[in-house]
Amino acid sequence: MTEYAKDVLVSTDWVAEHAQDKNVKLIEVDEDILLYDTGHIAGAQKIDWQLDLWDQVEREFIPAEALSELLGKLGVTPDDTVILYGDKSNWWASYAYWFFTYNGVKNLKLMNGGRQKWAAEGRELTTDETPAQSGAAYPGLSRNEDLRAYRDEVKAHIGSVKAGTGAMVDVRSPDEFSGKVTHMPNYPQEGVLRGGHIPGASNIPWARAANEDGTFKTADELKALYAAEGVTEDKNVIAYCRIAERSSHSWFVLRELLGFQNVKNYDGSWTEWGNSVGVPIEKSYKEA
Image (cartoon, rainbow, N blue to C red; front, side, top):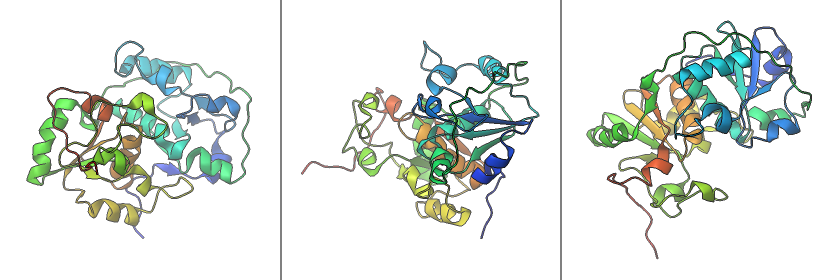
């Protein structure tokens, strides 16, 4: 069996044994930002992706300097191993992993399976507050734009897809991809003016990379999944979804687990593309 390209996963057993180690920092990042307060792994601290990672005025991330301060408040240093986990098969933990990597944070890992595997194994959660670990700002952060795609770059990338040198991975559900629906069930706040997909994109829903317990499938299974849709290591790849949390999960699979060298996450995703003027959209759904 082929091994993953990078050592970026830890098991729930590993976390249970090492969560209290001095140089291990456990961080929970959930879609449900109130979930942490109902119970979390002992020693874990919380990141609220809406308040902590997003600028509160502009549709943009906090700058690297602000992330340095945030990590300092969490007591994270470059000598620490940061273990991220969360709900939804690690959607938002993957998002934080991508954002941290984009800004140059080192020694990152995901707890394979996230909260759902931890709970399924009957492991304990606590509501006890994790003591503040405020320290010096995390030094030396700077952004690696090779990991992030912007709208105009995505538009230009359509030509690479047609030429066979690039690939576009739409990780949303088939109904979103086809244009049958303009938002996921239960997510009307993420609706857009136009449904469909970016021309040339392959529909490989994020969940196909995960097992029922939230863990990632094997490297061989993952490689076969993407190769079947023409997404191979020799191509430049851009992944997108609706607001980039699901595509961060797929970005993690492609870059970190399979070792693809050229993979970008389009964080504007469909909430930007589906509401933009002057961009092409394909639909594969037709009204009866």
